[in-house]
Each structure stands twice: as C-alpha cells, then as structure tokens.
Image (cartoon, rainbow, N blue to C red; front, side, top):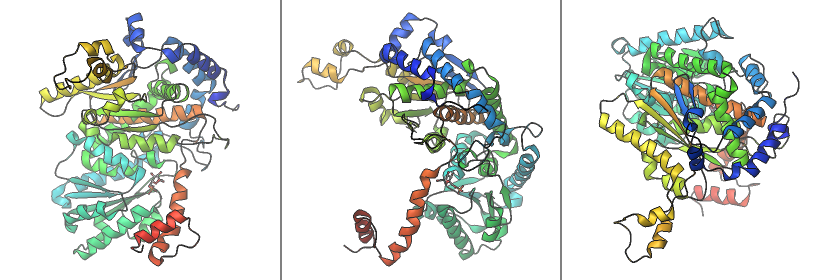
Length: 534
Ligand code: F6P
C-alpha cells in the first residue's frame, strides 16, 4: 500500500485552512438558514436506524466538499477496508482490530465459526440463567472496569424495556470498597451470579473485587463457586487459576472499549435475552455495512468524524457535549468518553512523530433535560463554544405521552436556542419579573443576551430498540475511527494508562511501610498524611 499522508500534509488541509481564514471563521448559522431554504434537507442524512440533522453545524457545501477531499487524500476508504479486512492496524501491539467480526453473520465474518460458537454457547447459558425457577438466580453482579464495564453498564438500562425484570443487575468497577460493599450488603450467595469480566484477567481493580466477592461468597455460606462465578476473558488460563471454569472467551483483536459485542456483553444478554442480543448485533452490523458501503458524501460516521476534525483543528473547539434525551442512555456519555478519549487521546502519529495539531476533544454530558438545569448555562452563555450532540428518541417505551412531548420539546428548544441566541435589543424588550428593578435595563439586557450561532447535531431514533442501539454505538465507533485515521494516530492502543498503573505498584507497599525514599516532595507529604502521620 502506498504511504498514507497525515491530514496536515495534504493539499485539502491547506485549502481548508484557507477556507476557514477567509470565510468559515465568520460563518453564521442564522444567515446560512436565511440564505438557503433547503439547508435542512441538504444537511440531513439517513443511516440504519438513525436520522441525523447536521444543518445546525458551521459547515456549508464548500466546507463539506473540502472535508471530503481531505478524507479521500487521507485514503479513508483504504484505511477502513484495511481495518475491516483484518490488517494489523494496531501497530504498537501488532494486532488486528476486528470488533466488526463480532456482529457479522456466521457466513460473512472473518472469524465466523469461532465467534458464533462462543456466542451460541453464551446465549444457551443465558437462557438457562434467565429461567429463574431452574437457576435460582435473581442477581447478576458484573465485576469489571473500563471496557469490561462501561458497555454493559450503559446498555442494560438503555434497553430496560426489553429486560427480564426478575433479574437485578449490579455493576462493580472501582477498587474503592464503597462500590462493592453496598452491592454485597443486599445479596444472598445462593441467588447471585458473579461475572468476572476482564480481557486480560490481570487488571488490579477487577482482580481485587473478584477476590472480595469470592471471600464474601464463601463466608456467607456459598458452596458452589463453579455455579456462581463465570468469567468473560481472553485469558482462560488465569480464570481457571482463579477457580472459574465456566468461561466465555474472546480474542486479542477485540479492544476493551470495543468489546460489548463479545462475551463481555454477557450481562446485556442476561438482561435482554438471546433474541434481543442478536438484534443488538444486527443493528451494529447494519451500521458496519453502511460505513463500508455508503458513499462518503452520505456516510454518517465519516461525516461526523470529519466534523470533529473541522471543529477541533480549525475552529479550535476543545470539547463536545453529548445530551441524550432518553434517561435510559444516562451512561452513554461515560461510555463515549472511553471510546473516544482512550482511542484518540494521542499526541504522536503512527510513526511516533509528535503531532502539531490537536486530537481528541473532551467528550462529556448528561441526559436531557437534567443537563439543562446544570451546565447548559455555560453552553449558552459561556466564553467557549461547545458543539452539542442531541439524541432524540421519537417513541418512548413508557405510557406517559405528556412527559415524552415535553422531553422532545425541550431537546428541540435547546438546539434552537443555541443557534438563534437572543440579541440585546430583544432582551431589552423582554418583561422579566424576577430581575432587579434597580438595575439599568440596558445592563440587564447585556446579561440576558445570547450570542447564538452555537452549533449542534441532532440524532433522531424512532425507538430505542436493541437494533437501534446497536447501530448507534457502531456509528460512534466508526466516527472515532474516521477522525483517528485522518489524524494518523493509533486509535486502538492505550499506553497512556500504563504509567499510573506502574507507579501505583510502587506506592502500594509504601502505604504500608511508610517508606518515602526517592519520592517527590508532594507525593511523600501526601503519603505521610494518608498514613495518619503529620
Ligand atoms: O484502563 C486501561 C484498560 O486496559 C482499558 O482499555 C480496558 O478497557 C480496561 O483497562 C480493563 O481491562 P481488562 O478488561 O483487561 O480488565
């Protein structure tokens, strides 16, 4: 394959910079809508299960054409095909990146038989546990962290409408005992199933919590560890050494943050059952096909990835806020934080060269409307421009139609307010019963002005079904791939987590011994303080 240029070394990059300097820097969404009555139609896109309105973003036809030219110059299609074809694109670990193979039909996937054999075995196990009378299981505790936690922890509540409510789910991730203690307090060993989820089966937090769970189980009369502990891991040997022989495996070509489709999805399957779990996989596969086959001009993950590059590298926006207007998606921002920031939070390119441009934005958020009453103030009137991503779900799975109408109205209104803003003249004309009467009205109007022109994307899903959620998550995965590919970084390693882990191993015995030799002054002082000596 001919070498792939990094985005900043392309012709399109220079043209984008020129376009930004001359025109786009001053782009105004209100003017754009006034000038083009068909802007919404031109900038809204359909992908499997998702309708995306990109029209409230600071782009026009010229911007998009240049971004697409950038994608082509960076040979995004060849890079995508290399990933999907199983090339070892995770070069620093010498591994392929094949999470797409986990949701492909048996005959179509690169590892069809391996993947589907584990899936079939796992789903048969799932149906056995879900038969509460036979299994006696009422509570499932997933012990895992990062990618072995965030996916199931996000999907289980999101698909609550499809879940078997006779089973309760608990997620323990933190090595802080305040996480596991309240969970164990209310459980009985005889009706609890522990899932020890760890790709490596070496992660400190997970191993420590698994040890606590096993000790609690035995101390409280639990007798059949083999029936009450299962493992989801690539390290079957380590799981066996821990004493677990019901293990569902996966492979090193599945990154932790891309693993909910593998055995790591066991709690999801336990919650929603085999048929719905397969529907989740189908939805992701449909999005994979869209990413693989749709022309770049209508390829939703590609367009969103390009928009991310545009905002990060040309506008200089440092973060993106995700606002799912669906309470079930309350953990989606946390899930996306790992997906995006662990993947693309890199400062060197694939050849190890220091990058002269910014990479991953901060991704953060809360469900609407809660966020509106917390940090939306800053989104509307703060000094930073933060693109917002609204996720609206048309049809609820609850019976309270009036609440749903209010929810959707709020989502639409927030996006509208961010874009339209409010001028000082408009503010001056407002009647404001709560405002101080002693203040000069002109000054008050300045406080009540909104600059507007704040960009947002709105994703609309008809109903949050397993299939729709699968498509949504896969869309985010491919979007992260797109921006990472343009930046020419390795989106599939995470060396940045290593240093802290190594230093923790050094500090751990010092907390017991009090030895501060060789430590920096701050760490030494804090260590003494935490040991109770001043
Ligand atoms: O924090 C780094 C990390 O390796 C993540 O990438 C991963 O998802 C998490 O730890 C958990 O790892 P494991 O599944 O091996 O326990």
